[in-house]
Picture 1 (spheres, rainbow, N blue to C red):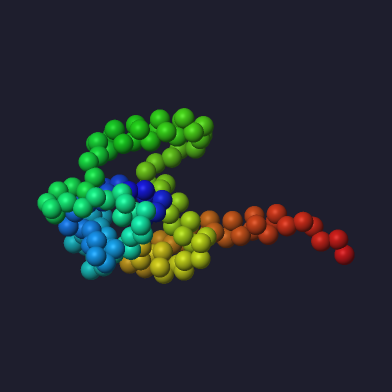
Picture 2: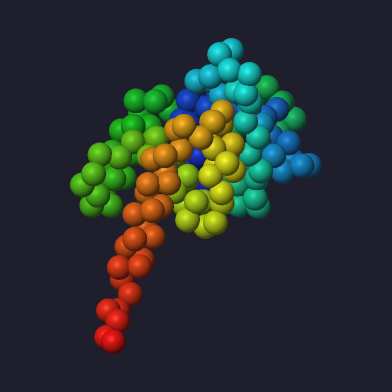
Length: 150
């Protein structure tokens, strides 16, 4: 599942089972591993669009894992190769996909509360970094306008 379209942590993707997918209501429901048992709001519900649903084939065995992925180490090695092939010089992690998801949907008009909910945050405290990124993009957009000659 493309993390840029859902913001799910790597540790949660590898634990997803078919029972987490509600095909009739087009929802993905799971409990965050990071906050499970520590927070009453550890449950996350993410609406699925056609693109995401097409990545998840249904199975009669609801206890089967949705995705068969290699170990976390092997996933990191693959990501490192992809980043190098793309010519990207920054340090990129799987978690960067989560951040990109948040910034992308904010840029596309989602409000901060919706983004916090989709990421499974119980409050807005951790959302400041995303709003700063959006503010920087807004400033760049304004700065790109031609200079006014009055």
